[in-house]
Amino acid sequence: MKMEDMILVSIDDHMVEPPDMFDNHVPEKWKDRVPKLVRNDFGADEWQFEGKATSTPFGMAATVGWPKDEWGFNPGSYQELRPGCFDVHERVKDMDANGVLASLNFPTMAGFNARTFHEAEDKELAMVMLRAYNDWVLDEWVAAYPDRFIPLGLAPMWDNDLAVEEIHRIAKKGCKSISFLETPHVQGFPSFLSGHWDPIFKALSDTNQVLSLHIGAGFEVIRRPQEAPVDHLMVLACQISAITAQDLLFGPTLRAFPDLKVALSEGGIGWIPFYFDRIDRHFQNQSWLNHGDEFGGKLPSEVFQDHILACYITDPSGLKLRDRIGIDNIAWECDYPHTDTTWPNSPEYAWAELQEAGCSPEEIDKITFENACRFFDWDPFAHTARQDATVGALRSRATDVDTTRMSRAEWKVRNEAAGVGVF
Image 1 (cartoon, rainbow, N blue to C red):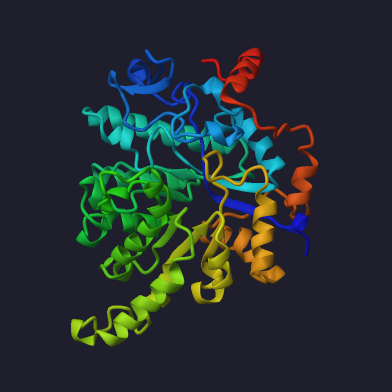
Image 2 (cartoon, rainbow, N blue to C red):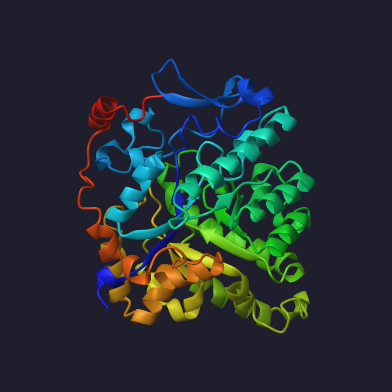
């Protein structure tokens, strides 16, 4: 097997939604109340809903294609972004240049848990916009290239009945997953252990959709020093995935819903072998805690492997311990267009680590696409022949894609001249 023979499916990327996303999906009576893109007094783009700026930052580290010394969390305007951030046709070209067959895209303006809509005072309006958001994702972004995107939607966290209804509605449209909070209790919601979310878990189980828990919303579960730099957030984020796993494993969730599938998006894998050692010994050694048969005659690590897909961008140590993690529980991701992305050299990064770990061709296929496609019930070859899905085949049709890094100022000049990103 050569690097060019790999098939890459990324289950953690992001889109920066275009300002016209609501145009085709909101009933006429609500159209004057849709979220709007506004250029603020500082010359930066921001989304406003119900007359105020949303708490989800525009762009959110969508710095792909910039030199590293210009990276940050909040690009100023669409004109400064690489068009693949917000234009689906340009995104597919960037995927080709990176040798990536398919991608699951998390929201930006809406927040990982539909935060923008949850924060709205008018919940009837919020629900109209959340449905419109899901329809845009499914009927425009994904539908433009059904062979290239795994559909992911949102559910309202403020009303379980509405959430169940929406989960069933979008499942009928082909949705494969919903994005949710990794540690809901940190944001003032009930915890996974509370039983509050059981109707949502049942709906996901009934519709064979994945609960995708992306890192980023659980930072406050760690009490950081006031002086802590932003590095603490970025380095420790993956450790929070262990807390999420603990809530799910040692609470009632996975016992109550044996068919529930959970993806720990961007959570990394290196922490898992130690976590397995710890929870299995704890379960066996601390019998006085009377866990009894809570794990159905299995070790906690085995229950983790039954339910949870662990995802990584780069993780050489974790790959060397893949047998301890479970070769069927590891999936690769790209994180386009954020600062952690390996674009446009994802195949080179992935191949080097897989080779260093001594992975066989069969193991490589599992990690780079088979596990993800099985878990999300998405057929990579429904529209694309296998020989056309490889890194080499995709890159061969992207020779005209310019992957040169340019400053945000250069992007602005280039995009304005091309009429791109000007709304």
